[in-house]
Image 1 (cartoon, rainbow, N blue to C red):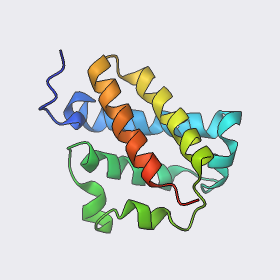
Image 2: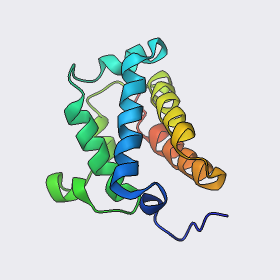
Image 3: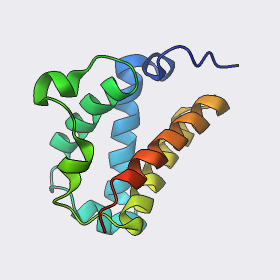
Image 4: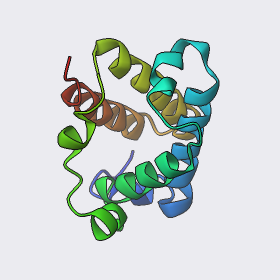
Length: 128
């Protein structure tokens, strides 16, 4: 049984685990035909996107607040307003994240908890 009182950051394997999750997420988004519309919203070179998501997730998951230290409060919804995010974009994002989670996290309660948290956050980003 997972001790959910520990930060998810530690349960994912800390910095290495979060980086691996982010890299797999972007690798999937970059190569799956069914996420092409989502991919087009990102720059050609994904390194900055990878770094920012890693920094954000580090703090969001209970680790060091790297994103806040570098950029201030994440203001996720406001930062995503310039992009047309509808249910299709949300679903494409979740397709990649859920697959990355399934490949990396074998602990069922942790996997479910993270999927639910990501789904709520992704749904909140919709602006169309």
